[in-house]
Length: 609
Image (cartoon, rainbow, N blue to C red; front, top):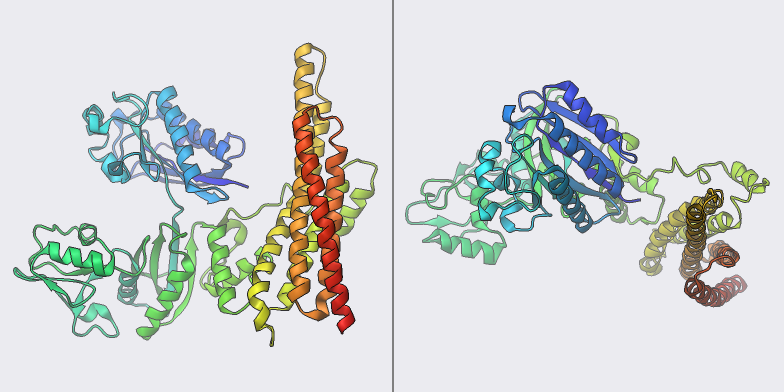
């Protein structure tokens, strides 16, 4: 399932009735799930967070922007936070099974619609920016609402969408795409905030002032090193230069960072560095961090913003912090996530720790998540509820079949209804085949004497889990496809137009009822492949389990192809039928050969025992 987060900021934080009306408008869009509403009276600004499918989030964002334009008059607005419009900013964030490029396209579509339909000037920013100078939101917003009327008339600041004349009531809006921000705190066994800050400065990309002398174990206790009138210093080594340009060239070549960028982060002017402290960057890109004391927990924390977890994930920062703390005689006791963390971020952390332990990552996702929670100490100070804290967590609440007990599912199959039928049962067989392949692989990993096969079996276990999960989804997908076709058959057919619409819906439904079981057949064939490797390389004592996995996979391939074939009869698209008929025959031939190979491996292994 594709999942996108949207975090619009509205220029109203005091009138609760206005806030509620905007929020209700967003919530009313089908498929939108509201996560948070955070109003601030001093800032006169409200941050709303919601998620959903791409289409749902696009519609929710547009309707929210539209309602804000109706209710908020920027000519009367004041607040402490910089702003330029009723909807000041509207970013889209990839959460699950969607790329940044796709979120950029979403931003463009929404921005264009806002410009055309609402007559609001729109600037694209961050990853959606069409010009380098528009990547930074602060640059776009400079001058704020009061300066925008003249600013957008300049050719350089022509809006990406909408008019070059200010909508005086609604102002301007920035629409963009950015990565998910994880608010992440790491706990220390000390009450000294300055100790936490000492580590925080080492972690953050912005870095810190260079110090000399008494810097071990606490760096902050040393004396600050400063540039002189005649000599400039590199913050990362002992290199000295006669000009800032010389130092900047050195840091780029030898240490791969932009010194001018670093100076700007500390508000240092390159033209006037004499007497100012030498700066050095920190360890991690996309990390902002500070130290503080938390009275509630009676300990110091390193408060961290991970602005791109795909580059710098939580576990990397956590492990580095453990080392930095140990160097200072401190201990990391655990960590906490403030707000939400993406499912994929936590999965990757769990896999990292499993691999460090020499264990297989080809285990159920729930087990991987629990490994991450325990390894990161996420229950150190507070509870960590997966359902509340993880965004993008696979949701089976609408999957009626796979959430049934085994006996309930078997009883349901046995009833007089046509679905669930052979397609769903084939998908179940394939998922069980993949599960057995994973089991055999995992039984052969991390044991004495298995080192020679672990390299081959670890990816098998991981792939088998992916196939198992995909085939589980196919159990409900097959029944849903059949039900959709039956719904089409029940459409009215009283007029020529209704008859045509019914016929088209039935044809579309039949095609879907072919595509879904064919995908089941393909996935089940892949399950046979991993079962073969498990039989070849796995523990000989479990070879029959791998063999059963192969048999189930082959049964699933044949059963799914049966469902493809039976649904072909009424499809009128000859090219479509020819394509799938050819693909099915090819898959059956390959499956037959693979089934024979697995049988031979199983029998040879059994005979040799």
